Image (cartoon, rainbow, N blue to C red; front, side):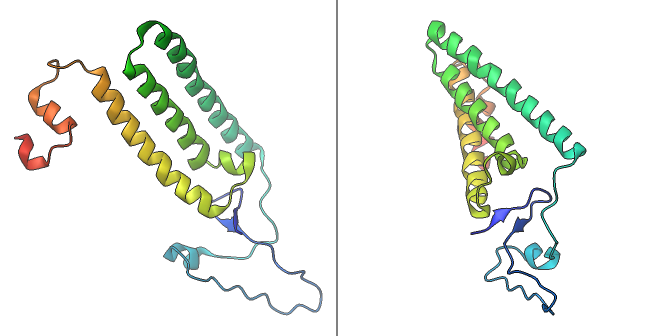
Length: 164
C-alpha cells in the first residue's frame, strides 16, 4: 500500500535493504494513473523531514482550520434560535471547506498518513460536497422573489440556452 511523502505530492514505498553488494535498484510502476508519475519519479534516500518553513506553513494551515471552526460554533447557537435550513447548509459548507484544507494541503499526511488512493478519492468526494452544500446554502438563504429571474434560472441549473 502506497503512502504519501511529506513534500511535493509524491508517494513513498519501502525498498528492500540496500547493501554494499547492491548494484541496482529497479522500480516498476504498474498501471500508473498519470503521465507525471512516470516523468517525475525518482528514488530518494529517505522522506524529506519537516523543516522550519514546512512547520510555518502547517501552522498557518492549522490557524486557518481553527478559524473555520468558529462559524460552526456560531451556527450551533444561531440554529437554536433561527431554526432555518440555511444555517445547517452553512455548517455543512464550512465542514467541507475544513476537510478540503485538511486533505488538499498535506496536513492530512502529517496528521494521520492516509494511503495515496484514499486521499485521491477523498479530494473528489469533498469537492463534490463543497459544491453541493454551497449550492444548497445559496438556495435556502435567498428568499423567493428576491433574485433576478435570470439569476434564479441560472442558479437552478437550467441549461445555458434557457437562461436567456
